[in-house]
Amino acid sequence: MDYFDVSQHWHPESEKYAGGDALVTLLAEGWEIQREVGVEDRFFAGLRSVSVYHLTLKRGDETMKMPVIRNPYINRIIRLGGYEQVNIEDMK
Image (cartoon, rainbow, N blue to C red; front, side):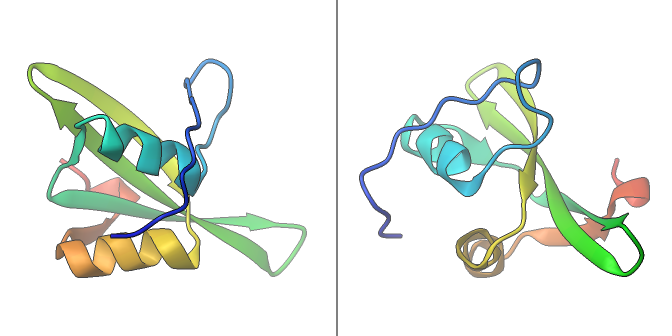
């Protein structure tokens, strides 16, 4: 997939959720999204909600969990990659 030339570092101790640019950076560095993707809807102030994808990424023998805020570009990555979307409570 084409994406702007962006490099963005993310660490779970510095930010609770990652943006799409941080995910794209990891994919460019050789990390791979695992088949099962958790989906969580977070509700704020009544009816306002934000969806979060909970991803497991692997590179060699390294594994990383990454919650990514849903946006149209990340939706496209998940859809075109054929990943299995499950409710966050049902993740293995």
